[in-house]
Length: 124
Image (cartoon, rainbow, N blue to C red; front, side, top):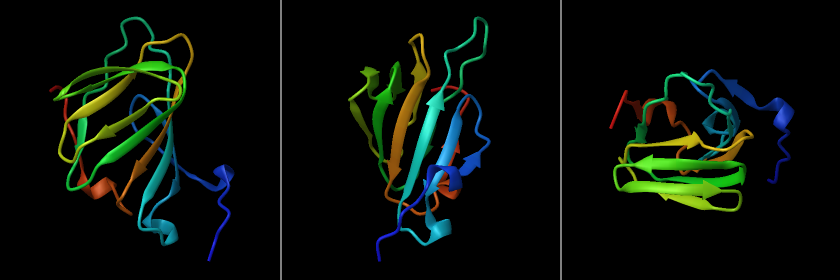
């Protein structure tokens, strides 16, 4: 059955260095996770967020607005609105804002509960 999900009903996650709305996940009976992530313009002297990885599945990131850089073990990518980044399973990565406006990402995961399979690091 098709369902209409409203952004206003999304779960707000308290993740460091970004604002995250989790709209779709196993909590609503889905087999995937969909998030809207907003990364603010960094303030001078602000510590940089470390990378993370996902055990057993890819992450697909669509850049909705802004400019940034996705750093991963396989390299560094400049990203802007309209770009898509596919991160392979178990690859450490982080996306940072390099622009003058918030960087807004749509993040898709083929996993209903990514919290238990995401590992955070302080550096590469």
